Image 1: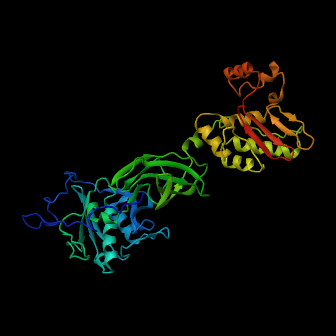
Image 2: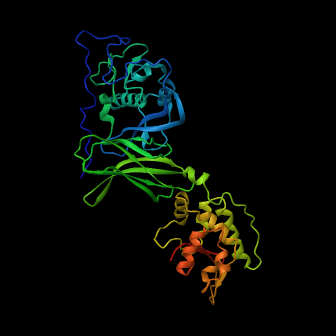
Image 3: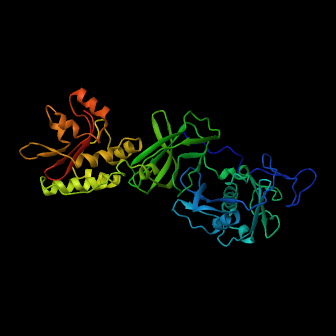
Length: 437
């Protein structure tokens, strides 16, 4: 299983003029096949994404989309940014001369006519001259309204400034400069952007392909299949749905791997991205509508009561990061009988799926408790009914408003309370918050 370098011809393809002679830059006879035939009357607004060169894959660097700023801007502004944008990571670089000025940029019939200053054609070696052209074309054609680029230098088609056999009287497409696209090319998300719900791009590989997302601490939080069948080395597009969960805004990484024959091999393509908690955690906290007054309970040891109040305070606002921090103070914390390593993520996931975990935490910790006697390490456990050997009607009535009547009936039928219970040790460490048996 190995990566295949894109099989597209050399560095560029020769674009020749029509047999009737070379057309002028203003001619409409040289439309790019498949482009729109309706001219755009309004300025084109595009994402503020520029294409730099990224190291990592064999025989790179290759073009990669990089978020320059949030929101849209005019095409000429984005191209000006391309010339001046500082690489945000050591793996990224640019070959566009920084003194390059954008004199004008307009779009008609799917072709962006871009007029640059002569600085763009500064001779600086074969690789640099070829790469900057690829950066320009990929940046301009990220917009779905642009299929090709007609390059002008100081108002005229440039004389050849690379060794590439290009007729600059004709529009240049991505296909022309595709040798600067790696065997694995990730178009979405851009480097540095917020990671959304889609991973999109193109790959020419032998084997299956998957993307893995890690959080700021390097923990794996999501895996998604990009190409789930053995590739044959030919270019294939991927557009995969992605789901992940973090509890707070943070940076992370999305990296692409080849998978097959029992092996997992990095392709060398990795983007830094921003990870955000789902909106549902902010807008649908089950404890959010509770009126919470956190009063001290003099029947508890002071340190135990402080932990109880801290849990109530965090749960009442669905502050899962703080809940996770409180849980981590115990040498061993139980939150699920089904395994898992992160209680905060487990509770957040449960909450996002409609289980009112935080609401029940708040309600139970404000109710009666029992003490599990132990010579050296007694446990304070909520709710009191958990240790009742023969629960009374009063015991079951204390669950009203926390569980539905149907759920309480199920407990009664089972002969025991199987709902959420929370335990705090005499040393004030939170020991468990678990449901079931």
